[in-house]
Length: 236
Image (cartoon, rainbow, N blue to C red; front, side):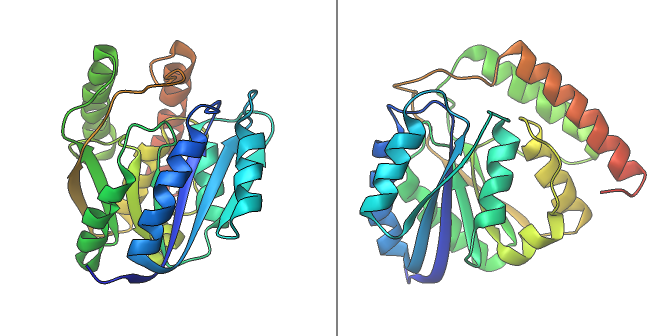
């Protein structure tokens, strides 16, 4: 495929000291291959381990890398918002920093963005706990009932945006896991063109998943009701 003129890549990290270096170093040759100008943002969401220190070292070694860190830990949504806010190029892709995706599959997204404003991944086969599968299916029902949209994999952490699309859905309010619902609900309201693409998903080798945590789930439900009210009252 032909290179795109420019691309911002960002990864949200929270306590991913065993993943961050491998994830970023695997992404660098892909970035060079697909874009003339590129940057990789490492978004450290208040990690309590060595994630930020490793990210700082990586950024010192490559001028195309930037570490953006906030304290304390605020949540997945907060990390994504930092990525969008700090991206400087016209195409913006985010990919979870847990090593469960093959970033080289970004070529599938770039091929689709020619006819879309947003391209979202859907995992061919989820490689995580069955409880996460249940939550995903419940989320699809929830979002269909409350927000009127349906996608194969709403919370897939691999999505590509045009800059104009991001501008139309900002500002984003969700700080936690409901950020993906907010992104898609606002994209639907803005009548953005959304396409889906299948991606592979691999087992997590290091670190812990937090998506099935009760605190995370309760926070997501609260944020969902807040989003629903804002959309209904024209505040979003």
